[in-house]
Image 1: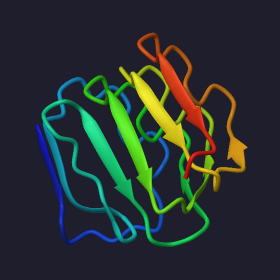
Image 2: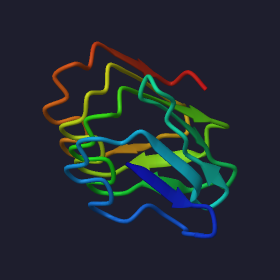
Image 3: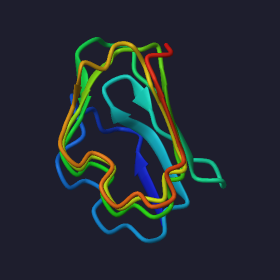
Amino acid sequence: MRLDLEKVAMSSLPSYLMVMVLVLSNIIGRVYARCDVAPNKDGHVVWDVSIRGTSVRQYAFSGCLALKSISFTNGYVTQIESSAFSQTKLESITLPDSVIRLGASAFFLCTNLQTVNLGTG
């Protein structure tokens, strides 16, 4: 499946955006305001946000089985809402110092999650 959001500008990822996405090979374009989300073939997402006060909305990636890792560059994400990454195949995540709120069950049933790095960025 290919999701092309090149001409779409959103200020946030809506709730339930990726619920139950079983096969996701490529997300291209501007998914988040000034944010290019492009998972590579290994399921890695680079979250390059250049605006402050951004959040990963409730259930944004819930059930996205292609998602294995995510990097937040620039340290502008301030909150990860409830169940944002629940039931994904995340193996590792680094939360930058800018994250001040982590919602309930943000990583619920992430059974592959082995490494969570806090406050490094």
